[in-house]
Image (cartoon, rainbow, N blue to C red; front, side, top):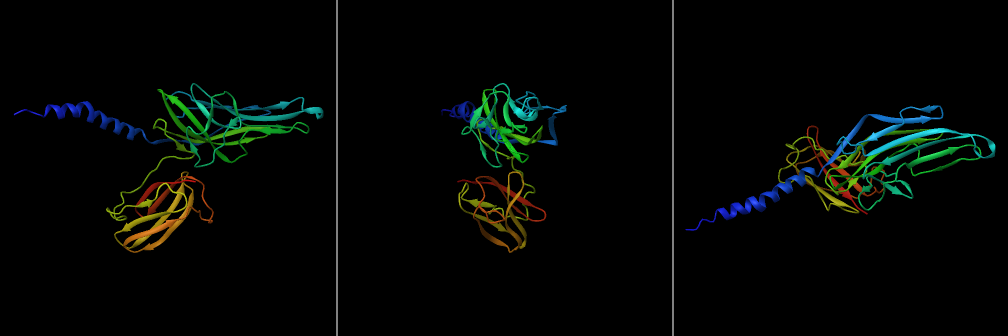
Length: 305
Protein backbone atom coordinates (compact mmCIF):
# COMPACT_ATOMS: atom_id res chain seq x y z
CA UNK A 1 0.00 0.00 0.00
CA UNK A 2 1.30 3.45 -0.91
CA UNK A 3 2.47 5.60 1.95
CA UNK A 4 0.93 9.09 1.74
CA UNK A 5 2.62 10.45 4.88
CA UNK A 6 5.63 12.09 3.18
CA UNK A 7 3.41 14.32 1.08
CA UNK A 8 1.52 15.91 4.01
CA UNK A 9 4.80 16.19 5.91
CA UNK A 10 6.39 17.96 2.97
CA UNK A 11 3.35 20.23 2.72
CA UNK A 12 3.60 20.96 6.45
CA UNK A 13 7.29 21.87 6.25
CA UNK A 14 7.11 23.70 2.96
CA UNK A 15 3.95 25.76 3.34
CA UNK A 16 1.88 25.42 6.50
CA UNK A 17 4.70 25.77 9.04
CA UNK A 18 6.22 28.90 7.41
CA UNK A 19 2.74 30.40 7.21
CA UNK A 20 2.13 29.78 10.90
CA UNK A 21 5.52 31.21 11.79
CA UNK A 22 4.81 34.29 9.68
CA UNK A 23 1.44 34.78 11.38
CA UNK A 24 3.09 34.43 14.79
CA UNK A 25 5.76 36.95 13.85
CA UNK A 26 3.23 39.50 12.61
CA UNK A 27 1.13 39.04 15.74
CA UNK A 28 4.16 39.47 17.99
CA UNK A 29 5.19 42.66 16.20
CA UNK A 30 1.71 44.19 16.18
CA UNK A 31 2.00 46.23 19.35
CA UNK A 32 2.54 49.73 20.66
CA UNK A 33 6.01 50.31 22.10
CA UNK A 34 5.70 53.08 24.68
CA UNK A 35 8.46 55.05 26.40
CA UNK A 36 7.80 57.34 29.36
CA UNK A 37 10.39 60.11 29.70
CA UNK A 38 10.64 60.07 33.48
CA UNK A 39 11.40 62.61 34.68
CA UNK A 40 10.26 64.87 31.85
CA UNK A 41 13.14 66.33 29.86
CA UNK A 42 13.13 70.08 29.17
CA UNK A 43 15.32 72.01 26.75
CA UNK A 44 15.38 75.80 27.04
CA UNK A 45 17.04 78.99 25.87
CA UNK A 46 16.71 82.67 26.80
CA UNK A 47 18.18 86.00 25.77
CA UNK A 48 20.78 85.41 28.48
CA UNK A 49 22.00 82.27 26.70
CA UNK A 50 21.18 78.63 26.19
CA UNK A 51 20.96 75.84 28.69
CA UNK A 52 20.18 72.33 27.42
CA UNK A 53 19.10 73.42 23.96
CA UNK A 54 18.90 70.09 22.11
CA UNK A 55 17.13 66.77 22.61
CA UNK A 56 17.89 63.67 20.53
CA UNK A 57 14.92 61.34 20.08
CA UNK A 58 15.37 57.65 19.29
CA UNK A 59 11.73 56.76 18.63
CA UNK A 60 12.12 53.00 18.21
CA UNK A 61 14.96 52.60 20.74
CA UNK A 62 17.42 51.07 18.25
CA UNK A 63 20.37 53.27 19.29
CA UNK A 64 19.94 55.45 16.18
CA UNK A 65 18.79 59.06 16.58
CA UNK A 66 15.66 59.70 14.49
CA UNK A 67 14.79 63.32 15.35
CA UNK A 68 16.47 66.32 16.92
CA UNK A 69 14.48 68.90 18.89
CA UNK A 70 16.07 72.28 19.51
CA UNK A 71 15.33 75.75 20.90
CA UNK A 72 16.92 79.14 20.48
CA UNK A 73 16.34 82.68 21.78
CA UNK A 74 18.06 86.04 21.46
CA UNK A 75 17.97 89.83 21.17
CA UNK A 76 17.02 91.67 17.99
CA UNK A 77 19.09 94.85 17.71
CA UNK A 78 17.01 96.23 14.86
CA UNK A 79 13.31 95.85 15.55
CA UNK A 80 11.64 98.47 13.40
CA UNK A 81 12.17 102.14 14.19
CA UNK A 82 11.61 101.69 17.89
CA UNK A 83 14.82 99.87 18.71
CA UNK A 84 15.46 96.39 19.95
CA UNK A 85 13.30 93.35 20.52
CA UNK A 86 13.70 89.65 21.21
CA UNK A 87 12.71 86.29 19.80
CA UNK A 88 12.23 82.67 20.79
CA UNK A 89 11.95 79.62 18.58
CA UNK A 90 11.50 75.83 18.82
CA UNK A 91 12.03 73.46 15.92
CA UNK A 92 12.47 69.83 14.96
CA UNK A 93 14.78 68.18 12.43
CA UNK A 94 14.04 64.67 11.12
CA UNK A 95 17.19 62.68 10.47
CA UNK A 96 17.97 59.95 7.94
CA UNK A 97 14.72 58.84 6.25
CA UNK A 98 12.43 60.14 9.00
CA UNK A 99 9.56 62.60 8.53
CA UNK A 100 7.31 64.85 10.62
CA UNK A 101 3.54 65.31 10.20
CA UNK A 102 2.98 68.72 8.61
CA UNK A 103 0.15 71.21 8.24
CA UNK A 104 0.33 74.60 6.55
CA UNK A 105 4.10 74.39 6.20
CA UNK A 106 4.77 73.71 9.90
CA UNK A 107 4.79 70.60 12.13
CA UNK A 108 1.25 69.66 12.99
CA UNK A 109 0.13 69.93 16.64
CA UNK A 110 -2.05 66.85 17.05
CA UNK A 111 -4.60 66.42 19.82
CA UNK A 112 -5.08 63.16 21.68
CA UNK A 113 -6.67 60.31 19.66
CA UNK A 114 -6.01 61.88 16.24
CA UNK A 115 -4.86 59.17 13.85
CA UNK A 116 -1.27 59.08 12.60
CA UNK A 117 -0.84 57.23 9.30
CA UNK A 118 -0.15 57.73 5.58
CA UNK A 119 -3.17 60.04 5.23
CA UNK A 120 -1.25 62.90 6.90
CA UNK A 121 1.08 65.26 5.07
CA UNK A 122 4.73 64.53 5.85
CA UNK A 123 7.93 66.56 5.57
CA UNK A 124 11.60 65.66 5.93
CA UNK A 125 12.83 69.26 5.81
CA UNK A 126 15.38 70.32 8.46
CA UNK A 127 14.65 72.91 11.18
CA UNK A 128 10.86 72.73 10.96
CA UNK A 129 9.43 75.47 13.18
CA UNK A 130 7.09 74.32 15.97
CA UNK A 131 6.64 77.90 17.13
CA UNK A 132 8.48 81.21 16.60
CA UNK A 133 7.70 84.52 18.30
CA UNK A 134 9.29 87.90 17.76
CA UNK A 135 8.50 90.45 20.46
CA UNK A 136 9.04 94.18 20.20
CA UNK A 137 7.05 97.41 20.05
CA UNK A 138 7.18 97.56 16.26
CA UNK A 139 8.01 94.00 15.23
CA UNK A 140 5.79 91.58 17.10
CA UNK A 141 4.89 88.45 15.15
CA UNK A 142 4.47 84.73 15.52
CA UNK A 143 4.00 81.62 13.43
CA UNK A 144 3.85 77.86 13.80
CA UNK A 145 1.08 75.48 14.87
CA UNK A 146 2.07 75.00 18.52
CA UNK A 147 0.45 77.24 21.14
CA UNK A 148 1.59 77.91 24.71
CA UNK A 149 1.77 75.77 26.76
CA UNK A 150 -0.78 72.96 26.25
CA UNK A 151 0.43 69.43 25.55
CA UNK A 152 0.20 68.37 21.92
CA UNK A 153 1.45 65.38 19.93
CA UNK A 154 3.97 65.49 17.11
CA UNK A 155 3.28 62.85 14.47
CA UNK A 156 6.43 60.96 13.46
CA UNK A 157 7.34 58.54 10.68
CA UNK A 158 10.51 56.49 10.51
CA UNK A 159 11.84 54.00 7.96
CA UNK A 160 13.92 51.18 9.37
CA UNK A 161 15.02 48.04 7.55
CA UNK A 162 12.94 49.06 4.56
CA UNK A 163 9.73 49.26 6.63
CA UNK A 164 7.68 52.32 7.63
CA UNK A 165 6.63 52.87 11.24
CA UNK A 166 4.36 55.56 12.69
CA UNK A 167 4.63 57.13 16.13
CA UNK A 168 4.26 60.26 18.25
CA UNK A 169 6.01 62.33 20.88
CA UNK A 170 4.12 64.45 23.44
CA UNK A 171 5.48 67.97 23.85
CA UNK A 172 4.73 71.09 25.84
CA UNK A 173 6.03 74.16 24.00
CA UNK A 174 6.41 77.62 25.54
CA UNK A 175 7.79 80.52 23.49
CA UNK A 176 8.21 84.29 24.10
CA UNK A 177 11.56 86.00 24.66
CA UNK A 178 12.67 82.58 25.78
CA UNK A 179 12.00 79.14 24.42
CA UNK A 180 11.37 75.83 26.14
CA UNK A 181 10.18 72.41 25.03
CA UNK A 182 9.33 69.65 27.49
CA UNK A 183 9.45 66.09 26.19
CA UNK A 184 7.07 63.89 28.20
CA UNK A 185 6.68 60.53 26.45
CA UNK A 186 6.61 58.87 23.04
CA UNK A 187 5.47 55.68 21.31
CA UNK A 188 5.42 53.90 17.96
CA UNK A 189 3.52 51.02 16.40
CA UNK A 190 5.98 48.18 15.84
CA UNK A 191 3.75 46.67 13.15
CA UNK A 192 5.12 48.02 9.82
CA UNK A 193 2.76 50.43 8.07
CA UNK A 194 0.17 50.28 10.88
CA UNK A 195 -1.38 53.46 12.20
CA UNK A 196 -1.23 54.76 15.76
CA UNK A 197 -3.42 57.28 17.57
CA UNK A 198 -1.85 60.31 19.20
CA UNK A 199 -1.38 59.42 22.86
CA UNK A 200 -1.96 55.70 22.34
CA UNK A 201 0.22 53.70 24.71
CA UNK A 202 -1.12 50.17 24.24
CA UNK A 203 -3.58 48.24 26.36
CA UNK A 204 -3.15 46.40 29.62
CA UNK A 205 -5.68 44.34 31.52
CA UNK A 206 -5.16 43.47 35.17
CA UNK A 207 -6.38 40.26 36.76
CA UNK A 208 -7.52 37.07 35.05
CA UNK A 209 -11.21 37.89 35.37
CA UNK A 210 -11.96 34.99 37.71
CA UNK A 211 -15.02 35.71 39.81
CA UNK A 212 -15.84 38.76 37.68
CA UNK A 213 -17.05 37.59 34.29
CA UNK A 214 -18.68 34.40 33.15
CA UNK A 215 -16.27 32.41 30.97
CA UNK A 216 -19.00 32.05 28.32
CA UNK A 217 -19.96 35.72 28.31
CA UNK A 218 -16.90 37.98 28.42
CA UNK A 219 -17.10 41.74 28.13
CA UNK A 220 -18.30 42.64 24.63
CA UNK A 221 -19.28 45.75 22.71
CA UNK A 222 -21.16 45.84 19.42
CA UNK A 223 -20.62 47.29 16.92
CA UNK A 224 -16.96 48.17 17.20
CA UNK A 225 -15.91 50.52 15.60
CA UNK A 226 -19.08 52.63 15.82
CA UNK A 227 -20.28 56.19 15.26
CA UNK A 228 -23.24 57.12 17.44
CA UNK A 229 -23.92 54.37 19.97
CA UNK A 230 -22.90 50.85 20.92
CA UNK A 231 -24.28 48.10 23.14
CA UNK A 232 -22.10 46.70 25.92
CA UNK A 233 -22.82 43.21 27.25
CA UNK A 234 -21.38 41.17 30.12
CA UNK A 235 -22.45 38.48 32.55
CA UNK A 236 -21.83 38.22 36.29
CA UNK A 237 -21.68 34.91 38.15
CA UNK A 238 -22.84 36.58 41.39
CA UNK A 239 -24.17 39.88 42.70
CA UNK A 240 -21.31 42.32 43.25
CA UNK A 241 -20.12 45.91 43.03
CA UNK A 242 -19.31 46.77 39.42
CA UNK A 243 -17.62 49.76 37.82
CA UNK A 244 -17.96 50.25 34.06
CA UNK A 245 -15.99 53.25 32.77
CA UNK A 246 -14.53 54.61 29.56
CA UNK A 247 -11.10 56.26 29.39
CA UNK A 248 -9.13 57.91 26.61
CA UNK A 249 -5.75 56.50 25.62
CA UNK A 250 -3.94 58.76 28.09
CA UNK A 251 -5.93 57.31 31.01
CA UNK A 252 -8.28 60.27 31.56
CA UNK A 253 -11.84 59.38 32.54
CA UNK A 254 -14.35 60.04 29.73
CA UNK A 255 -17.60 58.52 31.00
CA UNK A 256 -18.95 56.43 33.87
CA UNK A 257 -21.60 53.99 32.67
CA UNK A 258 -22.08 52.09 35.93
CA UNK A 259 -20.77 52.30 39.48
CA UNK A 260 -23.13 50.22 41.60
CA UNK A 261 -24.08 46.76 42.80
CA UNK A 262 -25.43 44.58 40.00
CA UNK A 263 -27.20 41.26 40.28
CA UNK A 264 -25.96 37.96 38.87
CA UNK A 265 -26.80 37.28 35.23
CA UNK A 266 -26.61 39.02 31.88
CA UNK A 267 -26.43 42.81 31.57
CA UNK A 268 -26.81 45.18 28.62
CA UNK A 269 -25.82 48.86 28.64
CA UNK A 270 -25.54 51.48 25.90
CA UNK A 271 -23.00 54.23 25.36
CA UNK A 272 -24.03 57.10 23.10
CA UNK A 273 -20.46 58.49 22.69
CA UNK A 274 -20.90 61.32 25.18
CA UNK A 275 -18.61 62.27 28.05
CA UNK A 276 -19.32 63.01 31.71
CA UNK A 277 -20.66 66.46 30.76
CA UNK A 278 -22.99 65.12 28.08
CA UNK A 279 -20.85 66.40 25.20
CA UNK A 280 -20.07 64.25 22.18
CA UNK A 281 -16.55 62.79 22.22
CA UNK A 282 -14.17 63.13 19.30
CA UNK A 283 -13.30 60.21 17.05
CA UNK A 284 -10.47 58.00 18.22
CA UNK A 285 -9.50 55.07 20.42
CA UNK A 286 -10.96 54.64 23.92
CA UNK A 287 -10.66 52.03 26.68
CA UNK A 288 -13.73 50.29 28.09
CA UNK A 289 -13.01 48.92 31.57
CA UNK A 290 -15.21 46.67 33.67
CA UNK A 291 -13.91 46.09 37.21
CA UNK A 292 -14.58 45.02 40.76
CA UNK A 293 -12.33 45.51 43.77
CA UNK A 294 -9.99 42.66 42.83
CA UNK A 295 -10.33 42.12 39.09
CA UNK A 296 -10.69 44.08 35.88
CA UNK A 297 -11.16 43.57 32.16
CA UNK A 298 -10.24 46.20 29.57
CA UNK A 299 -10.94 46.24 25.85
CA UNK A 300 -10.20 48.79 23.13
CA UNK A 301 -13.06 50.51 21.32
CA UNK A 302 -13.01 52.89 18.35
CA UNK A 303 -15.33 55.85 17.78
CA UNK A 304 -15.59 56.89 14.13
CA UNK A 305 -17.13 59.91 12.44
